[in-house]
Image 1 (tube, rainbow, N blue to C red):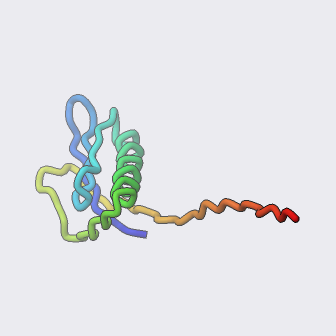
Image 2 (image 1 turned 90 degrees about the horizontal axis):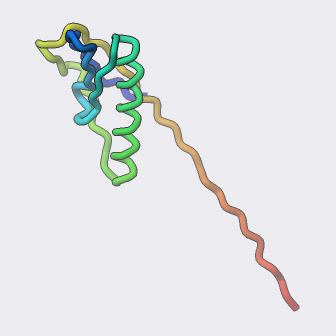
Length: 94
C-alpha cells in the first residue's frame, strides 16, 4: 500500500480534488464524498497508466501540502498483482 496526499478545495460549482504527490490525479465532483470517490478512481487510473508504460510510480511525499486547500488527507493506493495464465495442450501424433 502506498499512501499519497489528497487535497480538496470547496468551490461554488462543487469540490476540486487532487493527489498532491501524484501528478495528473485530479478530478472534481458535486460534493466531498463524490469527489473522494472520483479521486480514488483517478489515482488508480494514473497508477495503471504509469505501470502499463513501464514507468515508476511517484514516491509518496508525506510533507506535500497546498496552502490553498480547504482539506488535506491521506489517500491510499492498494497494489495487487494478478496472473494471466494460458494453458495449451500439445498434440502428440504418431
